[in-house]
Amino acid sequence: MKALPLILFALISLAQWAVPLSQIFRYEQTLSKGTLIRLKCSAPDPYDPLRGRYLAVRPDQDDVAIAKSAKLHRGQHAYATLKTGTDGLTVLDELQAEPPASGDFVRVTVRWESEGKAHIEWPFDRFYLNEALAPEADKWFAESIRGSKGVIAEVRVHHGTAVLENLTFDGKSFREILKQRVN
Image (cartoon, rainbow, N blue to C red; front, side):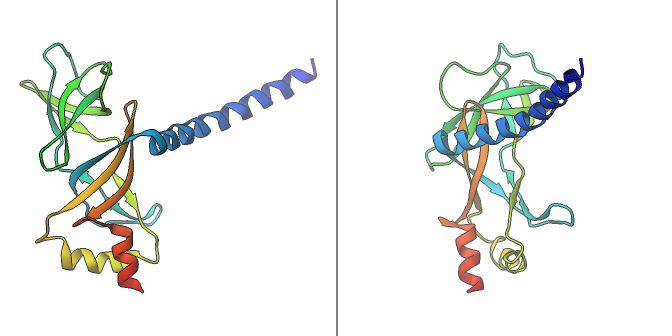
């Protein structure tokens, strides 16, 4: 009987480690095996004293048609199928209540729905920056972003999981642009 509290403690400790490790494993699998999609987005540069510097990534498309058979409601997780446009950028095709049997898709959250369309929340919203590069990012953003082609988010998707891998601007990695400006 004296071993029971020790066994319970060990099981609870293992459970506490299992959840974050499974998330890390899922994200690493997505980065290594996932399909690369490119999304046009905006990325303003906010600052949060607790989370540090990051770019708030907001894909341009946040409305999508709901599949005829799908019954969706606010706050529900749904699955957005993806298709590539003629410009090489990915767009959301259709929102379904269940994961599709084939093809690439992203698990999103329905913010609201009306008249066969839904406004969605993407599963990513931040691209973190090195604190040393952050002041230069502020300057560069102010100089460059307004009259440009825009920012492209490079995202890996695998079985509905989406991981933001990189941001590019005019075909160049955002981190590389900032490193060149700092050096």
